[in-house]
Image (tube, rainbow, N blue to C red):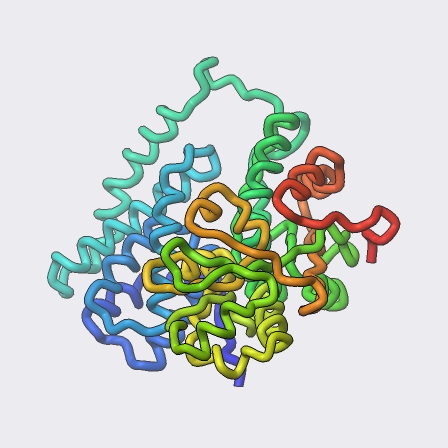
Length: 392
C-alpha cells in the first residue's frame, strides 16, 4: 500500500512542533514514520536551512533507519547551501527560519509551561535582524530599482535529475551571465520529483532522466505539453582507488569478484524510483549478476548519492551516470568503464515546462535547446538526439 505524504502548508507548520517532540521521544512510531516520509520526499523542507539544522541536531543519538540515514545525508547538503548569497526573496525566508531555529533552541532550554511566549521571543529577535539583513543587502546605488527586462526577480524553481548536476550548473551560469536572470535548482530522483509535481509542488520546469515520467505528467494535465528530448544518458561501472575490482565494460571482473566473495558493498541508485537505478539493474541482469549481487547492494536515493556511496570508504564500486563519472569531483576518486548501451533500455531524458511557468523558466527552456547548452551536455557525456526526433 502506497503511503500518502502530505506536503501542505499546515504540514510544514506541524513539522516544527513534531521536531520539538522528536528529541524527547514523544512521537509514536506511526507519527515518526510519517514525519520521516515527509522530510525525505519534500523539496521545500530540503531548502529550509533552519529546519535542516534543527533536524540534524535531533537526529543525533537516534536509532539509525534507512529514512534517518537519508535525512542525515540531506542535512549536510542543505546546510552547505546556506552559504549562497542572499536575494531579496530569500531574506523574508531567513527571518521566518530564524524564528523556527530560535524556537527549537528555546524548546530545549525552557520548561514547557512557559513555552507559549516562544513565538513572540523569536519574532522580537528576528524582526530587527531581518531589517538589518535587508539594509545590508540594499544595492549600492541607494536602493534604486534595476530593471530586469520585465522579468520578475523571483528565481523559478527548476528540478532536475541528479546526473545533470555539473552540466546544468554550467549551463545555468552561462544563461545567467547572458540574460541576467536568476535560476534556482534542486537535483534528485526523477521519480520523486514527478510524484511531487503530481501533488502540486511549485516547480516550474522538470528535467527528467526518464521521458516516461514526463509523458505521465502531460497526460495528467500538469505540463504545458509533452516536452522535448534533450539528451540520452549512459551508465558506467565506477571503481574507487584501492578497490579489488577493475572497471571493465562487460563486468567480467565484477563477476569474478562476486564468485570469490570479494564484494561487500556495491552501489546503485534505487531502482524503485531512480531511472539510473533501473538501468543498472537491467545491465546487471543482462550480465547474469543480479541475483548474486542483490545482497551486497547499497542503494542511493538518486544516482548522485549512488556515486558518493560507490566511491566511499569500504565500497568496492557501483554503477553510476557517465556524466557524474566525468565530473572533476568524482573522476579523481577512481576509474570507470562505459557499460554497453545494448545491455539496458535507453536513458531518454526529457524536459518539460510545468503549467504556469514564468517567463524566465520559459527562456531557460528555450536556452537548453541552443548550441551553447547542447555543447556542454555533450562534453559531460550525454548523447544529443537528432533535431527531428526531439519532440514527442
